[in-house]
Image (cartoon, rainbow, N blue to C red; front, side, top):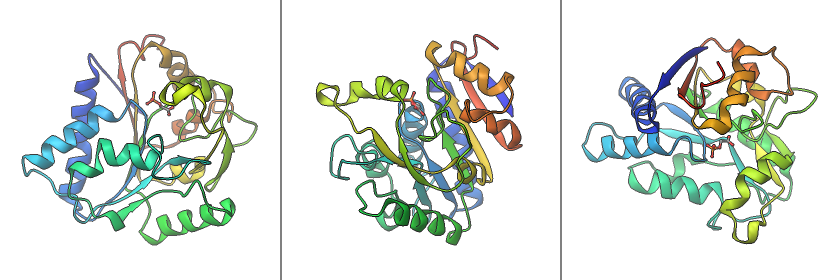
Length: 240
Ligand code: PGA
């Protein structure tokens, strides 16, 4: 893992956007794995600026998002589908048919997960995966558990994740299940960029980097992925 520490979220956003932009310039039809949450927003803002200046185009780029809530439709304002459109896709020239999400409302979740993993493979795999990290060191919605997951699957969100995310939902009522790419699926990405900012992430970051690899710290698996770059602010890096 390559660890870099910055003063501000905006600096991290600019650096991560530069990595993504360089990939798009090198490989205009690249496949990006994208994440929701607060962590990647500055990078998405920086990418929108680069697109507006004519520096990059997303017209041949394909994206796969990491996860999606169950029990709410794509049209819901809290779906990750909506989040990604508001924070990135509506502001760039990506083609809607190249934007991929797990369908959290699918009747047959297992079948939907198989479809998603097969489609990622068909597109040649993910060139660059953007990740955040949960306060409990989850990646995607892979919560701490007894075994590392492989392909995409339906997961029950942990209390820690529900606590962290419920502020986005009216009355704090939010889905307790989601579909997520599995840990092995994430690790198949050719390169990974993980962003963590703020003091609340410090323990998870420490456990990810310094502790043994264990499914109780899902992000610790990234120690084995030699093309992982971790971008931290000083607060998130404070225990290292
Ligand atoms: P955050 O979430 O970027 O909103 O902190 C990260 C995560 O839960 O994976």
